[in-house]
Length: 366
Image (tube, rainbow, N blue to C red; front, side, top):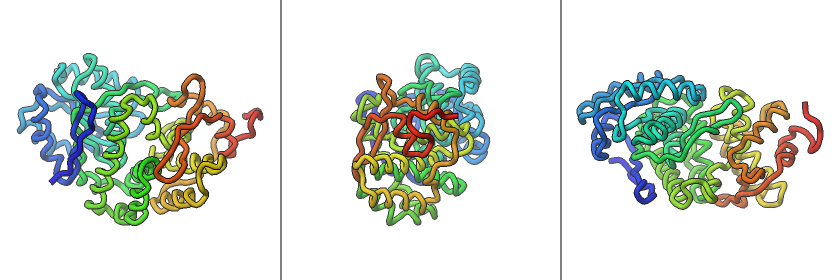
C-alpha cells in the first residue's frame, strides 16, 4: 500500500503517493482528479522506454487519450527552444483547460513539463510522476517550474503546483548508481536544514539506501516530502522561509552554470555547495567544525564530491551574480547554525570567492 501525505495549500492542496507499483496504476489515480480525456506526457527516450507502455495502457483503460512528447536527456531539455516544441505538441494533442500535462522522469522533465503546464492557456493541470530520488524527494514537490537561460539556471519560470505526485519506488531500481548518489545529496540537505534526527537516521541507514532497500527509500522519500511540504505550506512563493530549501544551491548552481550544465549532476553540485556553505558558517563562528565533519563524511559515504573543481574565477563570480536569491542587490545564502537549523544570511560575493579560494577580494580576476 502506498504511503500518502498532503501538501496543504488551501485550494491548491494536493496528495503525494509514494510506494511500490504505482506506475501501472497511473490511470486509477488520475481518474480521481476530474480531468479532460487528452493528456500530454513529457519524458525522455530512456525513461519512456522503461515506463511508457505500462502508463499508456493504464491511462487508456481509465478513459484518457495520452500523447507522448520526448525531450532531450539532461539540462539541455530546459530551454525555450524545447518549450516551443512542447507547445506545438500540446496543440496537436488537444490540451485544453482541463487536460493535464504529465511529467514522467527526473527533475528536468518535471521542470520543463511544469513550465509548459503553467504557461499553456495560462495554466492547465499538472501531474508529477518522478522517477529519480532527487525528483521524488525535492523537485516534484512545491511547484517550482522553470527553464534555463544561458547565463543561469532556472531563471525563467513560475510557481505552479501539481495536482498530484506519484512517486513509485520501483522506478529507483533502474537508476544508475550515479543518479542514486546525486539524489541522496538533496536527501542529506533536509537533515541539515530541518531535522537533526533525520540526519542521524541517514548516518545509520545510508548503506541500505545505496543498496536500494525499498523500505528505507520509502521512509526517506516520505520524510523529505513531509519536511518540504511543511516549508512550502508556510511560504509557497519563497518570500522568506522557503529559501532554506536552497541550502547548497547558491554555490551549486554557479558550479553548474560555469561548467555548462553538463559536467555535474545537480545533486553533485549541491553537495559541493553544502560543504562550501558549512565552511563559510564555520569561518563566521556560526557552525561547528565537528558538525561540518559529519556532513562531509556522510556526503563522502554517499559517493558525492565535497571539494570544488578548478573554475575560472571571473566566470564563477558572474554566475553568482545571476543567483535567484539576490534581493535589492544583496546576495543571500543559506548557512547552517547547527544540524537541523539554518539561517538566511546576506553575504558578499567577495567572501564566497575568498572561502572557495577563487581569488582575493578586490583583486582583478582573469
